[in-house]
Image (tube, rainbow, N blue to C red):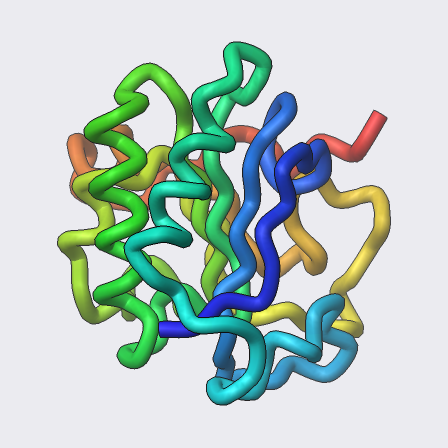
Amino acid sequence: MRYNKIRKMDIANGPGVRVSIFLQGCTFKCPGCFNPETHDFAGGKEFTAETLQQLLKLCEADYVQGLSILGGEPMHPQNIAGTIEIARAFKQKFPQKTLWVWTGYLYENVVDKKIFDYVDVLVDGQFKQALSSPMLQYRGSSNQRVIDIPKTLKAKHVVLCGYENKEKK
């Protein structure tokens, strides 16, 4: 697996101050994507054991509320094993912090459901430029859902977090 960048202090991709990793590779290539440099699977840098340790070290700070995994496409077959590895290591070390993941796949269509053992919030659905608004919180277009994964697993149907009808303040 490859990654494009790591943000040490991100306030846009989830609540509070977060560490974010942008994985490399996406086949959706949504028109208007805010991160087209992540589409090429051969781009970016190789994700190694050292990268994972660096990522976890950045998450140690008390002010960091959690980790966000974006893309590229974290749920793509070429990335899902690495996404699960990151998620597992993060939640083992920081069970009290939140893990958010963005994907172009719908929740119902994510093939490897093992990832949901670790994810707190999933933002799903492909970006649709015609439905985009800078006023949406944690998503780029109104078709995307902000899903509470623990509640969804318990209820056995999608439970939204409540950001769908809220705008950025």
